[in-house]
Structures are given as C-alpha cells and as structure tokens.
Length: 84
Image (cartoon, rainbow, N blue to C red; front, side, top):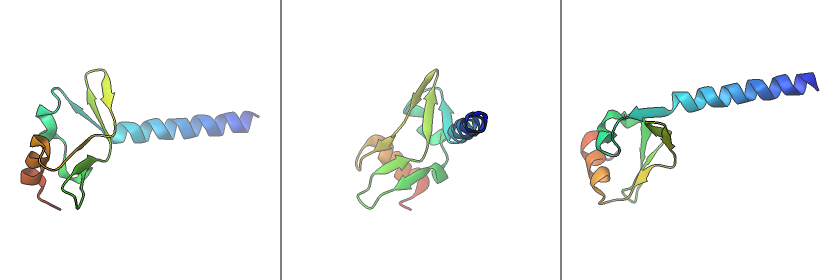
C-alpha cells in the first residue's frame, strides 16, 4: 500500500510540474496574447489557433484556449507566428 501511495504522489508531482511548465502567465487577457511564444500555438488547416498549455491571469487558469479564423486574436497570431 505504501508503494502505491508513493507512486501516486510521484505521479501527481510530475503532473503539477508539467502544468507549471506549460502555463503562460499574463496580466491582461487576451491583450497579452503576444507574450505567449509561437511554439506554444498550433495552427489548424481551418485557420484556427489552439494553445498547447494553460493561461494564468491572476489567480485564474484558463484551459482549452483557442481562436477561430477571422477572430482578432487569430489574425494577430497569423501576423506574429505566420500560418505555420
């Protein structure tokens, strides 16, 4: 039982470390979108953009962040990151 508990704790610690590594802190959302590196974004064939991680704004954490083609933020990403 103790080994299972230690394994679960190690797994949880690894999950939190991964979350911290892929969390981008900004002060103003979505105005600070340009502070997130291009490598964090995936551009889809339909013109939309999806973030591979989380955005932290103050104490709030946003997940599943994305912008559809034509959205002002998507256009900004098109300009900043190209249509990779």
